Image (cartoon, rainbow, N blue to C red):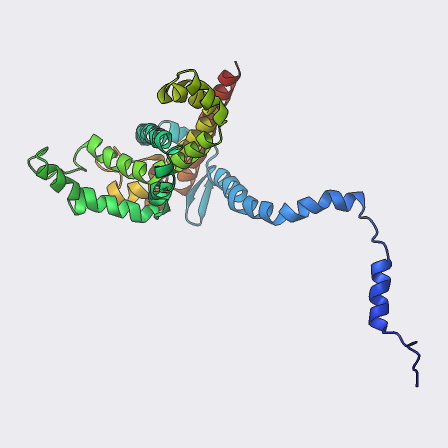
Length: 313
């Protein structure tokens, strides 16, 4: 007995029909808008957490704000800040502490990167140099506060070495207090510059170095005359980013020094915090943050523009 297989599966027929049908091409507008739809949520998130607070700070800086009481002040907050000695002292402290810290970080990171980027023995252990950057800033600040002040670890080591004869009060001297902040910042954030410099050195063409060595150039000569000039754009961008981050130094100051002695370690971030959350001058603090933002952007833009312009000439 034979059976005729004339019956068909409706689902299989529908699938075959859909497979055989040609897909209609997307319109030009849909092709144009599709990438924007993909990045739209991320852009919206960034605008919410960056643009809105900035606009709100500018708006708030035009008022004298005491909790729910808002009184129009216009540009009076900015005039008061320009005449405020504490503001300029905090700005100077930020420049001094940040400048010294950034210089030391750049020198140390470049030196370590120079010895590590080609050495096969050190290359596998470079992750160790990144360990300080993985700690929370508050934990690092507490560790160094314990080492310098509360636990007297540094003082005991100095006395054991015969360098000092008694316990050192690190917060009693202006420069000693600044030194504690510099040491903590250098210890934690030098790896940030180190990993960038190592990547820049490894990304250079090895044939150029080989040609220079065949001509009798030493490693130091190759580094100063070939590698370092080629790294100039990377160095400028990395140092600028680290410098911008240093201007927001707050955690170390809050935990380690509280701005003492006599405001010598009060940075701009701590000054804004003190005005806003201790003295409740929210409009005044907002005006200070706006001025600091303008100053930071101006300095960063000037440095980058001059560096790249001189690199082209």
